Amino acid sequence: AAPQMNYQQPQQQMYQQAPQQPNAAGAYLKRLIDTYKVVFKDPIGIGKQFVQSGDAALAAGFMLLQSILVAFFGMIVEAQTYGKAYKSIIGIASVFGGSKGHTGFEAPYAKVFFGTLLFSLLFQVILVLCIFLAMMIIKNNVTWQQAAVLASLRSITVAPIVIIAMILILINPVAGLFVFFVGSIWGLILIAIDLPLYNTPQSGLVYMLLFIAIVVAMIVKLLLMTKVGYKFYLPDALLNNIAKDL
Image 1 (tube, rainbow, N blue to C red):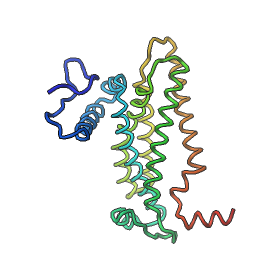
Image 2: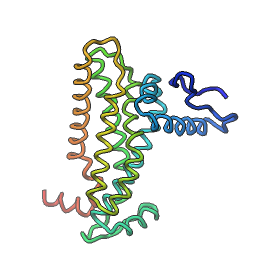
Image 3: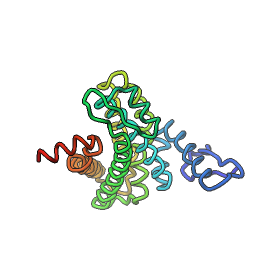
Image 4: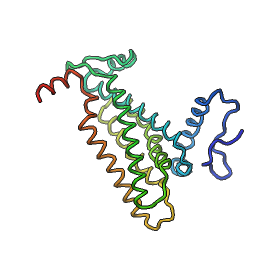
C-alpha cells in the first residue's frame, strides 16, 4: 500500500491507505483517523511534520471535530445552569428537546449546540488568520495552510480533554470547567512549540508576535461573546425580559 502523507518519520511510514477505499469520504475519514492517532501520540515530533505538510483539508476536519465536541460541552454546561443534568441528557437524545430546571426557564439546547458550533469554528478561523498575519509581519514564511494546521493541533489536543471535561462537569462543574480550560491552554502552547521558523535569527520576536496573535484572537472572541455569543445560552423568554428592561 502507498503512503498517504508526506510528513512521515525517517524509516517509518506514518500510515497506509487500505486498498480499494469505497469513496472519497471514506478515504478522507481514514486519513483523518490515522493522522489523529499518530499526531496525538507524538504532538511535538509528528506534529511538526504535520505542520510542514500544510494539509489544510485535514486541519479543517480536526477543527470541526473539536467544535462539535465543544458544542456538546456547551449543552452540558447549559444543563447545569437551567436544568437537571439527567433531564438535559434526555432532552438532547430527543432531538435537542428542552427541560425546565430550578430557574423556571427552558434550556435552549438546539440554540446552544448550533450557536456554539458556529462560534467555535469562527474563533478557529480568526486564530488561523491572526497567526498567519503575525508571521507575515515578521516575514516568517508560514503559509495559511500551515497556520491552519497549527491551529488544528490545538483541536487534536483538546478533543479528548473536552470529553473528559463533559464527564467531570456532571460530577463537579468546577472540576469540569478547570480541565476544559487547562486543555485549551495546553493546545495553545503546542502551537508555539510546533511553529516553524524559516531563516530568521529573531526567534524571540517571532514567538512574541505569535503570543500577541493568540491574545488578539482571544480578545476578538471575548468581544464577540459579550456582544452576540451570550445569546446562544440564554432562553428566549429570558432574552425577551432583558429586552423589555432595556
